[in-house]
Image (tube, rainbow, N blue to C red; front, top):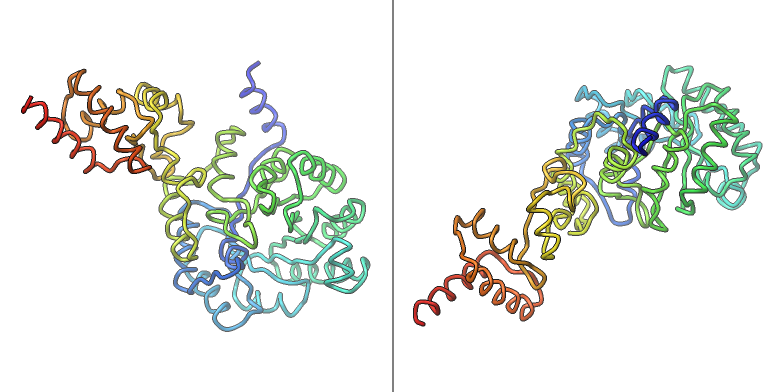
Length: 392
C-alpha cells in the first residue's frame, strides 16, 4: 500500500474534517508595534471570509469603543464565517461580547503553574472555578465556547486533563491548546494532544507560536493527533516570533497530509500583501508559500527541469496561491533558461551560438552586479551582442 493511501485511510478513520480558526485580527494585531485601522480589520475579515476560513477571531470587546464598533461592523457584513470574540474568564468580558452580537467566544485563562502563581497570583482550584463559571454563563447565553488553556504546553498534564474535563462538563465546545511561548516540538505535541483527546473526548484546537520556528510543524502534528481545529494568522503574524501561518498550515494539510480542503487558496498572495502593508511588516521574498521567490528559478538544473515539467521542482502550481512562475537569469542560469526566456517573453528565437554567448555575458554581468538581471539588462546584453556580431 502506498503512503498516500495509508494517510487517506488513517484520516478517514479519524473522521478528519479540520476547521481553520484565524486570529489575525486579535493575536495578529497583538504583535508589538502593529495597529490595524477599523477599515483594515473589516477588509481583512472580508478576505478571510472569501477564502472560506471557518471562524474569525475578530477582537476583544472589553477594550471598548473602537474595538466593539469594529466587531459590530464585521457582524453586520453577514459573513459565512463564524465570528468569535476573545475574553478573559470574567462574566463582564462575556457580556461585552454578547453586546457585539458574536456567535462564539473564546474564554482564556492560564493553566501552567508559573502563570497561575506569578501572573494570576491565585490557585489551581480558583482557575477551575473561574473557568467553569464563565463557560456556564456563556452557554446559558447560547454561545459557542472555546476554552483557551493559556500556556498549556508548560502545564502539568494531569491538571490540564482535569481542566479539560471540567470545561467539557460545563458545556465547552472545544479546548484551545495554547503553546503560548512556543516550547513544543512535533513529537511532544502529538503525545499531549492524543493523550488529552483519549482522556477527555473533547474537540481540540491547536494554537501554536513560532518562538523555536516550529509553529506550523506543531500545528500539523496536533492535527495528526486528532485536533479538529487549528488556529492561524495571515503571514504568521503574532506576538514575538508569531503564530502558525495560515498559508503554510492550509497548504501543509492539503499537500503533506493529503486532506481535502474547501479553502480558496488563489487569494493567498493578494491577502498576504494586504496584511503585510496594513501591519507594516514586510513580506519576505522567501516566505513559504507566498514569497515572490517561491516560484523563481535561477539554477540551470532547476530551470531546465521546471521548463520540462514544473513538478520536478514545484509541489503545486504558482497560480494555486496567486503567484506566477519566474525564470530568473543570473550567475547560475543555464542555456535552457536563456532560450526559453527569449522565446516566451520576448518572442525571439535564439540560435545555439547566440544562447551560448548571451549566457556567458549574462553570467558575467550578474557576478559584477551581485544579483540576478532585470529584463532591460538582458535586452541590453542582447542588443550589444547583435551590434558586436554585426561589426565583426
